[in-house]
Image 1: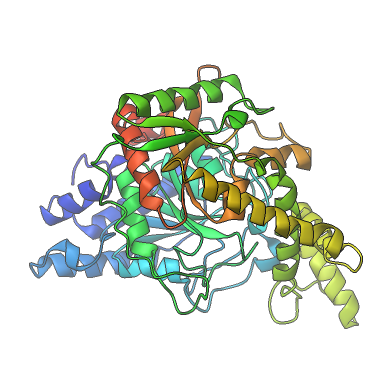
Image 2 (image 1 turned 60 degrees about the vertical axis):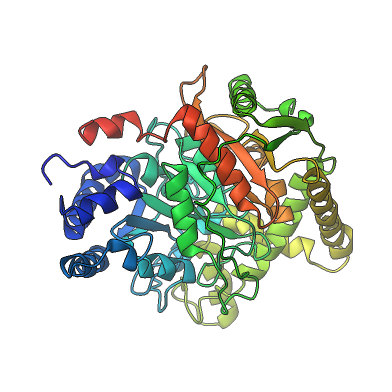
Length: 498
């Protein structure tokens, strides 16, 4: 094991080393936990580590290998360090959603997606920081302090899955899981230079995920390579009887990674490339990626998403309405923060919710309450659902002309802490990602190098038709041939011994 650098190894490399007895799964787990203990004080990606579960899982893997069986009998993630966004239940751990409201909550059960990784042989490392209840685009709204971007510790990692993105970028985990309601996987993927996948709605079960917007939420992986992301999605996808929205998916997302882009039709939305707020360095990188795909044999075609300009408005009606409904369960009676010293239930209830939720959570709860009130519902909520139908139809027409749509993942690179204080300006961080959640299609952020102006990671977004997620993986693999696998952030790669 001497000199082995697990921080920069991918799934296949770790598994090959295990089978060749170069190291054991217990050594992988111990080294990963030691790196988190040493390095995460700079990043604050983890809210809790799960040492006992990690070592126990690793010991089971070593027993299988010692018996002479191939590691594949365990599962596609055998021996791989994995961590989870803290809105995902893992029995025996705290599931806080980065909120004081759930600070003391201990999960009595395990989310399906988490269970699937563990059954696939993953080594569970712990729970990851996030924006409170997934409300945010920077991880600054976490009640337990922000996560820092490993590429520049003075900048945000994006959000709401900022901890999940930062853990992979810093080499603290091989893969992580995040959730995406309006861009919360793809935007932090772009900010941290990681492969970040939001699958088609229904590909991954939402059972055991603390809900933000039930018709919008979807779980997906972060990784440093397209293959690692595809292998992880293989492990967590499929029908779950505990989630009525999950679908019977049996796609092998690694199957066409070697096919290249030749013959693919790549859709470009001209209006997006001239959108207000899109920085020059990001635009250049998206155009560069398009030309690389053309050079690889793909055809670039212009497509139109005429109603996408209304996506932001529709999302900030639908999202808060669903959040208001989902967060009503946190009433301080059954579980959650309970404000002390109140003699009547009404006073306890009001004070507990006022003091248990942070400012952004309260803002969205109040907005949802207003939008669902009598006399307002018909004016806003119903038209927002109509816009959703129009956007979905736009995507259907666009995919008649192309296999994948290419666009920015974020309008800019990572910004500094406190740089965006206005909520409306912060919401614009998701201007290129929200329409996808409204339509339910698959999308991913693929790192394409560093921006010329900021020298920070830029991600291009690849979007695919519903339940054709293999299309975007194929295009991403073609781009990876040009840009290479995502590196660990330089400062943390140096600490890992590179």
